[in-house]
Image (cartoon, rainbow, N blue to C red):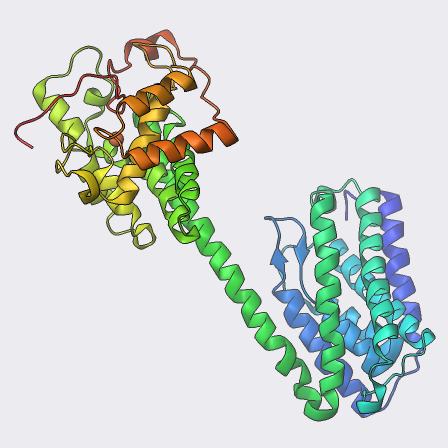
Amino acid sequence: MARLSWAARLYIGVVVVLAAALIIRGPFGDLRWWRNVAVLGLLLVVFESTATLLRPRQLAWSPNSSATLAAAVLLGPVGAALVGACTIFGMRRGPSVAQRLFNTGMMALSAYLAGWVFVAMGGQVGVPDAGTFPKVIGPFAVAAVVHAATNHSLLAGILWLTSDRDFAGRRAPLGVSIKLIASDLGYGAFGLLIAALWSVAGLFAPVLVLIPLFVARWAVAQIAEQQRAYEATVGALCQAVETKDFYTRGHSDRVSRGSVMIAREIGMRSERVEAIGYAGMLHDVGKLGVPTKVLQKTGKLTEEEYAAIQLHPMRGLDIVREIGFLDEALAGIMHHHERIDGRGYPMGLTGDEIPEFARVLAVADAFDSMTSTRSYRGARPVDEAIAELRKCSGTQFDPAFVEAFVAAIKRDGWHSPEPPVLAADELTAIAAQDHNDPGAPLRMIDSL
Ligand SMILES: [Fe+2]
């Protein structure tokens, strides 16, 4: 707490003392009452210990309002506050002592107020029965709103008062706060469901209602984690390619964007749109297998050097073949230099023999190359690049995808990259020719 201001310490102290004062006043119930406090408190500890971290070291969120609101109905204000106070036993690593004390006081106070409002609105404390519905819904709904409002107001207070980075860094943007309040209210509704089930399932009511929810939440978190891992993998490979071939910085990202525009325009399914985005990012990953001196060579390439560049789609496939989630993207990477007329590489496929992903990538790839600055020419305007795509439509490119791309660009626009600012020594090291540029003369390698 060393970095907390006096005002912030006082604020935390008031919240904690107030919560404690409300709890110790009682009244406390019998042994069964305490057992129910323990069960709901345990549930809250589980949620608190597995809170979703919205951003690393920042705001954490857990559906613990469902436990405290169930307690408000089943046990009354003091029981709810006791359940809220179980926040102190949360096993999540990260919060400092000050944060932990504040969170505990905040949860206990919110729960107490919710319980108090529930009673004040005519809600009957205890296990609801068939006769309790629907009149319990009104008091419960108001209690849930008071719970969320108290919780977020107290949180806003400490964030406003403190200069401690541990607290201040946890400030959530307004949009996130609104979503969190909405989530609190949504999960709060499960509190009433737990209370309602209590008469049938007793202590198992929380398990019946919330464990399946908890598993679903965990599964969604796992998917999100997996998605982040995919993106990190693709990002790292892209970074490696662009480090090696620095004059095409940002090219992979733009080819990915262009390919996704075409894919959406032709109505591809969302999973395939995602896959083609990855294919765009990784289409030139095979450059990692091409000698750097060839990629960055000034002047004319020899036949062998050109052959080495033409091998990059196959090298790309070799590099990423084992990455399971790429799936259909692999075909795009392998064939993105094929041409409709069969004069492309590496296989010389024609027309529909060329995988759809590859035909889409080829259009976006060439377009970005034309609208980017190269050492041997300036960036061509978008209209000129479109005219070139149309000129090569049916020979180099699939006409349907050219027109889809043109329609998407006319509607959504296209941001061509700024000319690169390179040091003089970098400029001299730039390759004389971009292999994606349709304006560059076509070369056939007989040996491929
Ligand atoms: Fe390529």
